[in-house]
Image (cartoon, rainbow, N blue to C red):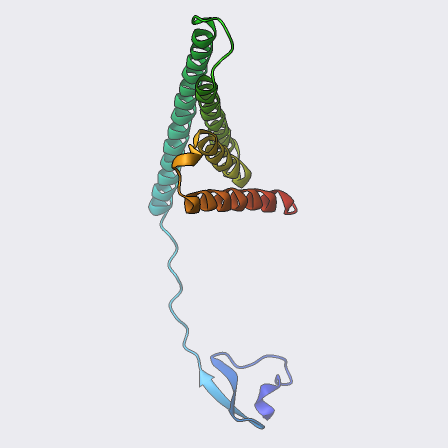
Length: 187
C-alpha cells in the first residue's frame, strides 16, 4: 500500500488518517478515512474548581475530626480498661484467703489483658491512618490473631464440637500465613 508511507515533505494532509485493514491474511489493503474534529472539551469554570476544592477540604476536615475523636475515645477506653484490670487484680489478690489466683480468676485476667492489647493495636492502626493515610495490614492481622487467641484461651473444649475446633485451627493457620505473607513481601 503506497499511501502508508509519509509524503516527501514528511507531513500528511490534515483531516485524513490512513488505516490498514486486513481482510485476508496475506493481502494488505488501505482505506482513507476522513476524520472530523470533535469540539474541544470545555474548560472547567473557576467556580466549579473552587467548589470541588472546598468540598475536598471539607471532607479532609471531617475525616480528620472523626479520626481524632476515635483516637480520643480509644485512649479513654483503654485507660479505663487498664484501671479496671488493676482493680480486678488487686481485688483478687487481696480477697481472703490470701493465696495465689485460681484458674478462673487467671483466665478472666488474661482475657481482660488481651482485650486491652486489642485496643492498643486498634489505636495504633487508627494512629497510623491519621498520620500516613494508610492502613497497615500487619496491624489488622495482629488484632485478628490476638482476638482469636483470646477466644482459644477462654474456650471450653469439652463443650465444643470437633469440627468447630478444626475451623478454629484453620482460622489460626490462615491468619498466621497471612501475617507471614504481609511481612515477607519486599518493601
